[in-house]
Image 1: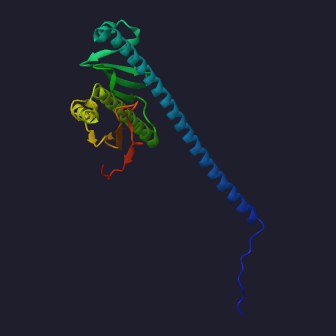
Image 2: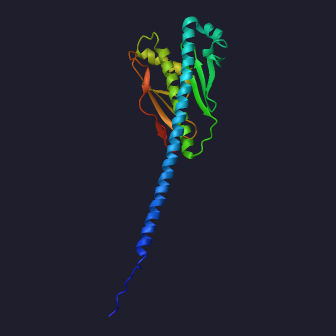
Length: 241
């Protein structure tokens, strides 16, 4: 008969296994702690960036309100007279038919352009920063945040265009005809197409692309337009509909 072979463990084997398990759990815990710490730092930076951007936008809106008040009281002549003398319009200058200025906190700058013919409509609000993003996640966040800004302010400029087209219009058909004609002269409508009663475009920075659809509301609605849904991130090889 063949003898059966067996493996026997020495008296120290359970201790070695226990040490191995403890070391493995310690390494996993350390990796989890490092990941959580990095996530926390990124979240804090994102929150700080959002707070700064909101503050800059608030300052820009205060200047916009000051311009609107001057226009209501004395037209563009009142705005001209206030430039350089009114503290509310510090840094504001003319660029063709728009008022331009920068809101900055020293690290981030919001470049503003406000058109004042027939109202006060944003034509541009671009955010730039001299802070170097350290990680791929931070770079992606910064790029997508900048695109979100571009999408929002294009929609606001298009909404202002719709408001101008709606003034004194006889009916829906005449309104849509005005919208179609106005798009040819509206800078914010570059690349935007009118599909039925929707304004559709793809916002891109060359790396990321978002498909945006804005619904044009009826004339008796309180608002002129709204997004049909959250802008859709298109894949690299995905064709825009």
